[in-house]
Length: 152
Image (tube, rainbow, N blue to C red):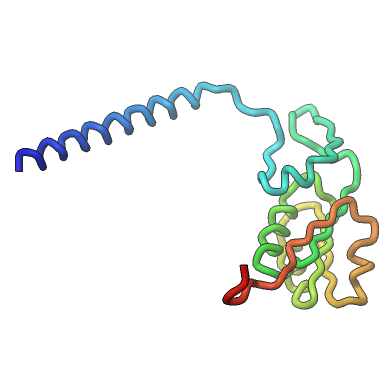
Protein backbone atom coordinates (compact mmCIF):
# COMPACT_ATOMS: atom_id res chain seq x y z
CA UNK A 1 0.00 0.00 0.00
CA UNK A 2 2.79 2.46 0.80
CA UNK A 3 4.42 1.83 -2.58
CA UNK A 4 1.09 2.35 -4.34
CA UNK A 5 0.56 5.67 -2.52
CA UNK A 6 4.06 6.83 -3.45
CA UNK A 7 3.48 5.89 -7.09
CA UNK A 8 0.14 7.73 -7.10
CA UNK A 9 1.70 10.87 -5.59
CA UNK A 10 4.55 10.79 -8.12
CA UNK A 11 2.11 10.30 -11.01
CA UNK A 12 -0.09 13.16 -9.77
CA UNK A 13 2.94 15.44 -9.40
CA UNK A 14 4.06 14.57 -12.96
CA UNK A 15 0.60 15.35 -14.36
CA UNK A 16 0.45 18.67 -12.51
CA UNK A 17 3.90 19.61 -13.83
CA UNK A 18 2.85 18.78 -17.40
CA UNK A 19 -0.33 20.83 -17.06
CA UNK A 20 1.62 23.82 -15.74
CA UNK A 21 4.13 23.57 -18.61
CA UNK A 22 1.35 23.36 -21.19
CA UNK A 23 -0.34 26.41 -19.65
CA UNK A 24 2.92 28.39 -19.80
CA UNK A 25 3.43 27.34 -23.42
CA UNK A 26 -0.11 28.39 -24.36
CA UNK A 27 0.30 31.76 -22.64
CA UNK A 28 3.62 32.35 -24.43
CA UNK A 29 2.05 31.53 -27.81
CA UNK A 30 -0.71 34.08 -27.28
CA UNK A 31 1.88 36.87 -27.27
CA UNK A 32 3.42 35.86 -30.62
CA UNK A 33 2.64 38.08 -33.64
CA UNK A 34 -0.04 36.77 -35.97
CA UNK A 35 1.00 35.20 -39.25
CA UNK A 36 0.36 37.30 -42.32
CA UNK A 37 0.27 34.37 -44.75
CA UNK A 38 -3.12 33.46 -46.25
CA UNK A 39 -5.04 30.77 -44.39
CA UNK A 40 -5.18 27.74 -46.67
CA UNK A 41 -5.61 24.07 -45.83
CA UNK A 42 -2.20 22.38 -45.67
CA UNK A 43 -3.00 19.62 -48.14
CA UNK A 44 -4.14 22.07 -50.79
CA UNK A 45 -1.45 24.61 -49.90
CA UNK A 46 1.42 22.69 -51.49
CA UNK A 47 -0.64 22.02 -54.61
CA UNK A 48 -2.30 25.34 -55.30
CA UNK A 49 0.30 27.74 -53.99
CA UNK A 50 3.19 26.18 -55.93
CA UNK A 51 2.51 28.62 -58.81
CA UNK A 52 1.48 31.43 -56.55
CA UNK A 53 1.03 34.83 -58.12
CA UNK A 54 -1.06 36.79 -55.70
CA UNK A 55 -1.22 40.41 -54.71
CA UNK A 56 -2.20 41.93 -51.41
CA UNK A 57 -5.09 44.30 -50.99
CA UNK A 58 -5.05 47.23 -48.58
CA UNK A 59 -6.69 45.08 -45.90
CA UNK A 60 -3.96 42.42 -46.15
CA UNK A 61 -6.10 39.62 -47.55
CA UNK A 62 -4.80 37.54 -50.43
CA UNK A 63 -6.48 38.04 -53.77
CA UNK A 64 -5.97 35.87 -56.83
CA UNK A 65 -4.50 37.87 -59.70
CA UNK A 66 -5.20 35.29 -62.41
CA UNK A 67 -7.80 32.71 -63.29
CA UNK A 68 -7.02 29.24 -61.93
CA UNK A 69 -8.89 26.16 -63.02
CA UNK A 70 -8.42 22.99 -60.97
CA UNK A 71 -9.76 19.58 -62.00
CA UNK A 72 -10.31 16.69 -59.60
CA UNK A 73 -10.48 13.29 -61.30
CA UNK A 74 -12.22 10.96 -58.86
CA UNK A 75 -14.26 13.71 -57.22
CA UNK A 76 -17.18 11.49 -56.17
CA UNK A 77 -15.02 9.22 -54.01
CA UNK A 78 -14.19 9.25 -50.33
CA UNK A 79 -11.06 11.39 -50.82
CA UNK A 80 -12.26 13.45 -53.79
CA UNK A 81 -15.33 14.90 -52.05
CA UNK A 82 -13.57 16.45 -49.03
CA UNK A 83 -10.72 17.58 -51.30
CA UNK A 84 -13.25 19.33 -53.54
CA UNK A 85 -14.74 21.01 -50.46
CA UNK A 86 -11.30 22.30 -49.41
CA UNK A 87 -10.59 23.62 -52.89
CA UNK A 88 -14.01 25.27 -53.06
CA UNK A 89 -13.01 27.29 -49.99
CA UNK A 90 -9.56 28.14 -51.40
CA UNK A 91 -9.23 31.80 -52.51
CA UNK A 92 -6.62 30.90 -55.18
CA UNK A 93 -9.03 28.73 -57.20
CA UNK A 94 -11.49 30.39 -59.57
CA UNK A 95 -12.93 27.39 -61.41
CA UNK A 96 -13.36 23.83 -60.11
CA UNK A 97 -14.02 20.93 -62.49
CA UNK A 98 -15.16 17.69 -60.84
CA UNK A 99 -14.91 14.45 -62.80
CA UNK A 100 -15.73 10.83 -61.98
CA UNK A 101 -17.38 7.89 -63.68
CA UNK A 102 -20.68 8.51 -61.83
CA UNK A 103 -22.44 10.79 -59.32
CA UNK A 104 -20.26 13.84 -59.99
CA UNK A 105 -23.05 16.25 -61.02
CA UNK A 106 -24.62 15.71 -57.57
CA UNK A 107 -21.37 16.49 -55.79
CA UNK A 108 -20.97 19.61 -57.94
CA UNK A 109 -24.52 20.70 -57.12
CA UNK A 110 -23.85 20.29 -53.39
CA UNK A 111 -20.64 22.33 -53.57
CA UNK A 112 -22.27 25.06 -55.62
CA UNK A 113 -24.44 25.92 -52.60
CA UNK A 114 -21.36 27.10 -50.68
CA UNK A 115 -21.23 30.88 -50.87
CA UNK A 116 -17.92 31.51 -52.68
CA UNK A 117 -17.16 33.01 -56.08
CA UNK A 118 -15.68 29.74 -57.40
CA UNK A 119 -17.56 28.21 -60.33
CA UNK A 120 -18.12 24.44 -59.94
CA UNK A 121 -18.95 22.07 -62.80
CA UNK A 122 -19.52 18.33 -62.65
CA UNK A 123 -18.51 15.95 -65.45
CA UNK A 124 -19.25 12.23 -65.65
CA UNK A 125 -18.36 9.53 -68.17
CA UNK A 126 -15.61 9.07 -70.73
CA UNK A 127 -17.12 11.52 -73.22
CA UNK A 128 -16.87 14.46 -70.77
CA UNK A 129 -13.26 13.92 -69.62
CA UNK A 130 -11.85 16.27 -72.27
CA UNK A 131 -14.28 19.02 -71.23
CA UNK A 132 -13.25 18.65 -67.59
CA UNK A 133 -9.53 18.95 -68.41
CA UNK A 134 -9.79 21.83 -70.90
CA UNK A 135 -7.77 24.83 -69.69
CA UNK A 136 -6.74 23.34 -66.35
CA UNK A 137 -3.83 24.77 -64.40
CA UNK A 138 -3.80 21.85 -61.97
CA UNK A 139 -5.14 18.29 -62.15
CA UNK A 140 -5.49 16.24 -58.96
CA UNK A 141 -6.22 12.51 -59.22
CA UNK A 142 -7.43 10.92 -55.97
CA UNK A 143 -9.24 8.19 -57.95
CA UNK A 144 -8.51 4.56 -57.31
CA UNK A 145 -9.93 1.18 -56.40
CA UNK A 146 -10.24 0.33 -52.69
CA UNK A 147 -7.95 -2.44 -51.53
CA UNK A 148 -9.32 -5.93 -51.47
CA UNK A 149 -8.36 -8.55 -48.86
CA UNK A 150 -4.85 -9.82 -49.55
CA UNK A 151 -3.72 -6.72 -51.47
CA UNK A 152 -0.63 -4.88 -50.24
